[in-house]
Image (cartoon, rainbow, N blue to C red; front, top):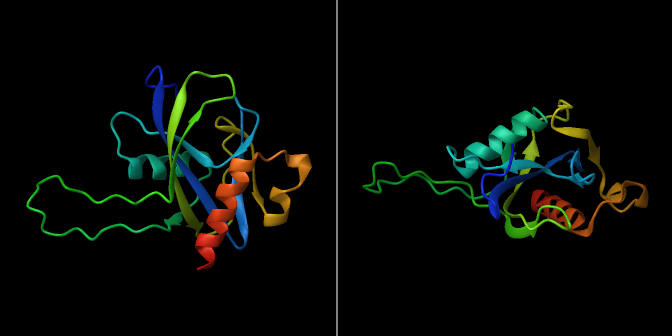
Amino acid sequence: MPHIHEKIDFVVNAWIVYDGKILLIHHKKLNLWLSVGGHIELDENPDQALFREIKEECGLDVEIIAPKPKLLESGWVNWQPLYSPAYVDIHNFGETSAHRHIALNYFAMAKSDKFVHNKDEHNDIRWFTKEELGDPKFGIVPVVKFYANEAFKALEK
């Protein structure tokens, strides 16, 4: 999806783990290994964007590992609890871009390892072990390693 705003957009990232591995996609425009994710569209909330992006990019069924408050009698007609992201950050879209993303980062457990490679969305998709994250042949950037390792830790609890 193209950028909605000229300067800053909100995005969701799903750090999906299964059987000691993390799923990463190879981004077409950035030529980097990244998490599954994308823009929050104008007509959706973060949870809707998260599950839509997961379905579009890899087709997996997942369980989000995050607190979600129980819906109480709030007295408000349209009150809805949302998953809490594990981390929130802001970053440039590309090294030289003036456009920025506010990223809501979620950790998830896949229900199987059978993903779909959507070639319209990314160049490649694969499961990485902890050791492969550090292999220079993949060129995985430090922030991706950080979030991936944090997802591993969160799911080991």
